[in-house]
Image (cartoon, rainbow, N blue to C red; front, side, top):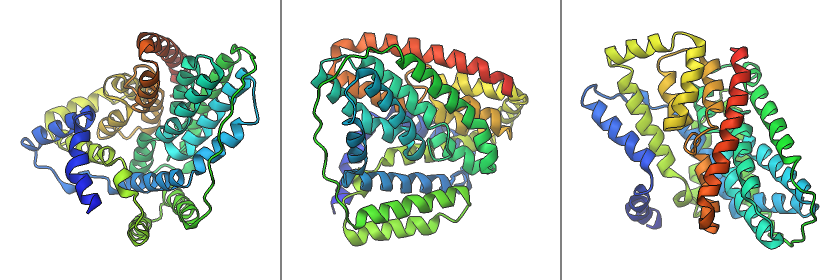
Length: 372
């Protein structure tokens, strides 16, 4: 009953702030009047991967696993430069395993707490963590929704995939650590309460699910079995997890699948897009530019329907996650957290964010054009 009430009321209220979902749905409906939509447009594999990863994250959060690891690691240091470097590295590794969203949701509030207790401005490190999450998540097939989608659609070998993404993430983390090198070495005095690590069946099951999802991604095992087990387990255990999942994200994917599927069957648009994306460099630059406007996930879905050149697409939409605030929707997570605590620094945040993001975008974007 609680889950039903959530769908009826909570979901409706959340729609008001989900502009990307609303835009995608409107376009899906409009194009459905031109071309009859097909269920085959929807990539159910991608949706199930995202669903299972969301469940894993919520179970980990419920048992305080992520906070336990992060806080115990950070309590070892008291130097501002070292603390900031540790935060960058933690976000980097968390984002490649559990997506950029999860990394930022875990570490941005923690960073702000450390800043308040130690009386230092966290604006720069929050922005660096945001950039880190986008570059770290670029490395793995499960690091971000666009990677999950591209890996599922084009089915490259793991080696071929990492050949493309390893350079982006490696160059990115080196740049970020160089920037952090100029952080002051001031001693920070703060105390963080270590959450209780609840060792129970949820820890075992969530880890099992996570490993199973990785096997489904890399070895192409059918993910329907993992999904079925997941749902049955949550119902049997009566875990209050389903209502905490980001159903709007899954619905947004469905809307984009339908919209893009319809669009790809309109002959005039199809021919124009195929001609536009005939060259690998055009695919690369289109991925970067389009990401600045509609964000990199929908950009990946849209472009993928008109080209089989997955390598420049993968490069373009991941590098394209830098730049504007909406280039990667994960960036909005940091922005909302920071501005809710320091509303008077909204303009300063956007200024520093834009300078750093566009600078790194131009640097990495210019470098990797030579690898296409």
